[in-house]
Image (cartoon, rainbow, N blue to C red; front, side, top):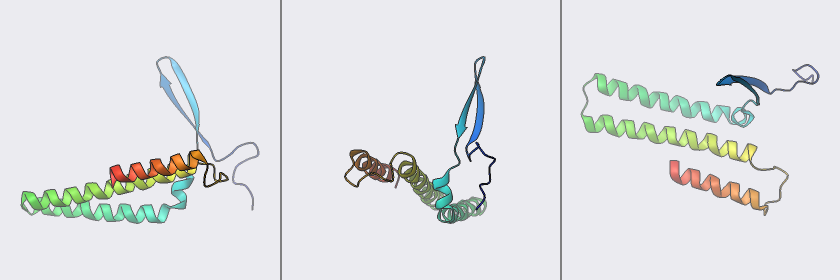
Length: 122
């Protein structure tokens, strides 16, 4: 399979921003971990979109406040779940060496962090 980038280049992109009088450039890698879970994440977002549309319909129909708030809270929970999933994938992709032993302290710490993120957001 031919590599999609010219020799010497990778799939990292460069992003530039200014800080005062300085231009700061840094390489930005695509979210490969998101690409691996793309279908699952997109399905989650489609469900969230449906929830938001339901809130919009409820407001448009002058639904009771309690019903609108219940739907909004449900939508917030779905967004928190989405965020937790992306953070979990990021931790596992960028903070843990895939070749590390299961008993590696860094791997154990990363798994503990994933548990904390899920406890806080879901």
